[in-house]
Length: 441
Image (tube, rainbow, N blue to C red; front, side, top):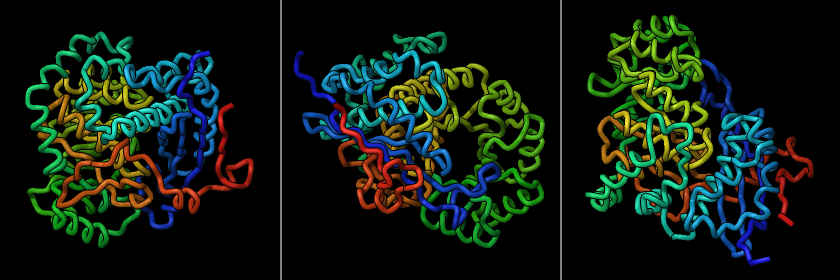
C-alpha cells in the first residue's frame, strides 16, 4: 500500500455558550438561544491540522456532533494530499456515500456535518499554503477552484464555462483589489441594537453607538407584534437619522400574505430590506413577497440547504439580497457555487454572520467575492455581531464599520483550547470529559 497523508486524529466537541442569559440572539422565532458549536479538529499523519464547525443554538448540538463523528470512518483512507491539486475531492468523497446521502440528500444535519469536515479540509489547505483562506481562493487557478463546484444540479442556471468566464474576467485588477482589501477592509453592518428581547432604551442606545462606531446600516428583529415593531423601528429611525440603513429580520415568522402586509406597514421608515419573511423552503412564496413589498428588497439564504435552493430563488426572482451562511451548506465549494450564481444573476451578497465563528468564516467568502468574483462592494456588507470572537485564535475584527482583512493562515476556525474546555457541554458526552476524541485506526 502506498504512503498516504491520512487523518490520524479526529476530535468532535460540543461547545455551548449561555447567551440566553443576556437575550443576545433573541428573535421572533428563537427567543432564548444558547449560541453553540459542533466543533471539529482533525490532524494528519504529516502534521497538517484543520478545524471546522457547525453553528447551532443549543439543544440538538449533540445531534450535530454525532453526525460529524459518524463521518470519521470515511476519512480513514482519504489521502489529504489530494486536496493540493483537487480541492473538491474531499466533498465528493463524503457525498459519494449513498447511505449518508439518503438522509438528506444534500440538506439537514448530515449535510451540515459534511460541511464541517469539508471546511476543516479548506482550513488545512490554507494553513499548508500559509495564506488566509480568502487569499488562497482568490489566487487559486480558476480550473482548480472549480473542482470544488458540483454543476450537476445548477447547470441550467450556471454552466462550468460561464463560471470559468466570470473568474477569468476578474483576473484583470484582481491584485489591486486584494491590495485594497488589505488596506481598507470590507463594509459591515451590525445587528447589535436589534435583538427582540432588548428594551426600547437599549435599542436606541446601541443604535446611536453603532452610528458613532462607523456603521452605515443596522438590523432590527421584527415579527412578534406589529404595534411594537412600528414603535421600535420609528425609535431606531429617529436615533440614527435618515442616512443610515435599517434592515429588518422576521426570522421566518410569517406566511406570505402576512409578510407582505406587515412589511408594507413598516415601509414608511425607509427599510433597507426584509430578511427571511417566511419559510426558507417556500421559494415561490418568496417570489410573491418580493413582488408584494417592492421596492423594499427581500433578503434570505441563511437557511438555504445548498446551491440548488439558491438557484431556484434567483430563477424565481425571490431574493434581491443573497445571504450565504458558512455552516448551513456542504462547505466552501457550495459557497463558491452560490457566489458565482449570484454574480450570474446580478444580485448582491450580504452574508449571515453572528453566531459562533460565523463572522470569522464568512468574512473570507466576501473578501474572496470582491477579489475574484463580483469585483464590487456596491450595496454589499457582512453582518457583524460583537460577541464570542475572543474564543478564536484569529478573531474577526471590525473598525470604523469595516471588517479588517484576515491575515492569519487558514479559515479563522480554530478555537482556543481553554474556550473548548470552559464551555464543553458535558451532558452530551459518553466519557464525561466533554469531548468525543477518537484517533483513526
